[in-house]
Image 1 (cartoon, rainbow, N blue to C red):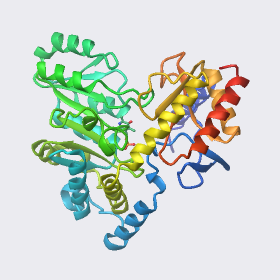
Image 2: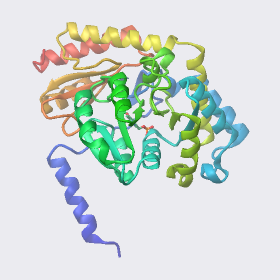
Image 3: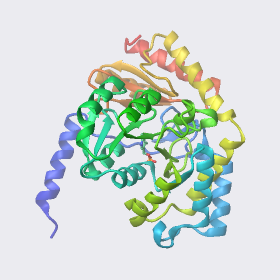
Image 4: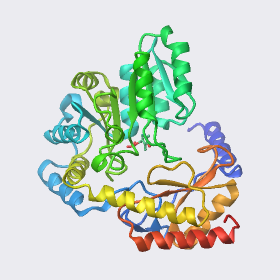
Length: 395
Ligand SMILES: *Cc1c(COP(=O)(O)O)cnc(C)c1O
């Protein structure tokens, strides 16, 4: 007989989530992820996915996946260190290393797993991690798993980082400074050149998670290290192939020695099966497209700048956004939820983000711009934002 008390406890917690407004209603996408898609039975303009470059439904990626599927089958049915390393994995890792201008790359099953893989492999008891207070959940979990001491510094605040390094660094063996590259809720960019400088002063390792910088920042989407011309200065770059690449998967780019070490030591590489064939082939095709041309990345920025300018002209607050992640900050939680619902009625799919994901009083709609939006799409979105904004007396 199953444990009834346990199930009832969870039921109560779920009720509590619903009562307090923290219950997540999960919508269903019934078409490919594209500029327009069918969500809960309705055709809507997609301003929500991380599909920056339109790769999620790109014919070339689909063709590459199909071809590989025919040639190599579906999955390796093993972890990488036993019999799960297929030639395709190595081809992808080499292509990524070249793309990122790094010595070597190790790929993982997702960005989340990349952080869980890398952080506990490189720091442990007796070490210290300095972590930006707004870092992604997967960084936080990776830090916790490592059993190193965790010291949070104020968001993007290099003075605070320096103060904490100077007060604490000497008490520990190894020190790691870890930060998101682009912060996913605000769309701002980490002050990486200053972080690198301070970390050097205190003999710390620097790791940046470029999940939202991949395919977005730098030449042809090579990421934050390329954006700041910091090649060779950052110890480890984490990447994901689940956002701009439109597929799924993650990786760490670093020196050959670090990657060789991670192949021996990172637990999800040793104990969780390797990426499937179609995923690897599709990711590889995404890298090839980015290496051939910068057009998509340029179009992404053109679109983002156009949308932001129009929204600011209309009186909306685009917050700290420096990237295609465009928060439209409303402030009040209820109004923001209502705004997002009204936009959905009007044919626009945009996510409301409220406390506890962002601080109280900074509730927002998080608009994700893509290279595949047309100017008409963006004008349509701005018009609807203005219509609902006036209706709800936000502008
Ligand atoms: C989305 C995200 C991840 C997780 O990547 P997945 O490939 O979806 O697991 C990790 N880190 C950051 C900063 C992210 O934004």
